Amino acid sequence: MITEEELIQIEDRANSAQAGPWKAYIEGRDHESGSSFIMTGTEEQRGEDIEMVGATIADYDFIANARQDIIRLISEIRNLRKK
Image (cartoon, helix red, strand yellow):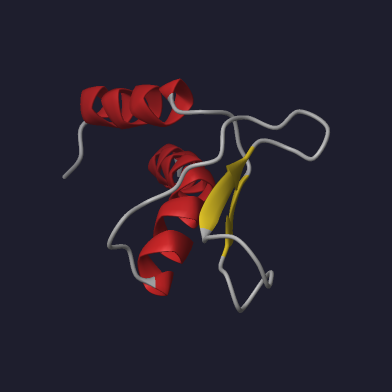
């Protein structure tokens, strides 16, 4: 079982990353020129783009969505523990 202390550590790592949401932009799927990247932040308040070497499309999608998914999962765990 994950302890509350472990949840706090995971949450701290997520909150220390660049602001979300993150979205993967894959060359050939989401745009036609340039390279694949992960956009951080909103259109109005963008952070630095993240580019990776050797990552698959699935890797980009997983990493980009993890920014949002981890926070949601932590919240769900805490809600379930209250029941």
